Length: 244
Image (cartoon, rainbow, N blue to C red; front, side, top):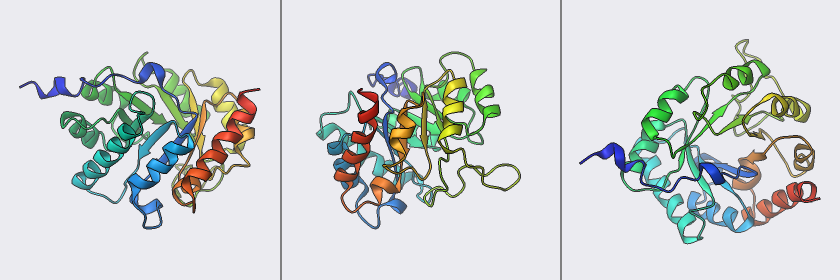
């Protein structure tokens, strides 16, 4: 049996990828609540993309969480519209796809597996996102061969409790991009940019006025008392600008 071919059996969401309302979530972000339940509520609120970021979980735990999330997305009737990716763990994403769990791709950082190899492993129909927090990194991303990545994740807009390492440079200092920095990156990137890092409802209209393709949040939804209402508020704030 050709196991590698099984990873390519899912309908690709690359051409319909919507990163305008992007949830990043893991067990450490939900205040002890079930990850799949939070995702279900976020889907009801209008989230368009989900990333599982389970930094302290082993492979089997991530596979289990991925199955639960994929099932929730399917139950909501959104498997063909809402992309589901796994953070960093390309090996786990590949394993999930081989097992028939609908994981659409991965999001990796600059120090993770080279995106060229991610593409080789996961195939042409997988979604691949790449973090790029400075102009220099965006320039390097722009030099990638066509078809390797699908979008760029940029931040932080503010210091982030959920991702304290986001924006920490080689000098060990935190470099905040703010909305103006996101705007600059979105202007020079030839790929769609989704921005996050401490983003709140108040930031979303400002981001919507840039060329960014969307926002990503962790605690603003995963840590909210009512994740569905929190998602609805964020989506409404984005659309209040983009639908004009």
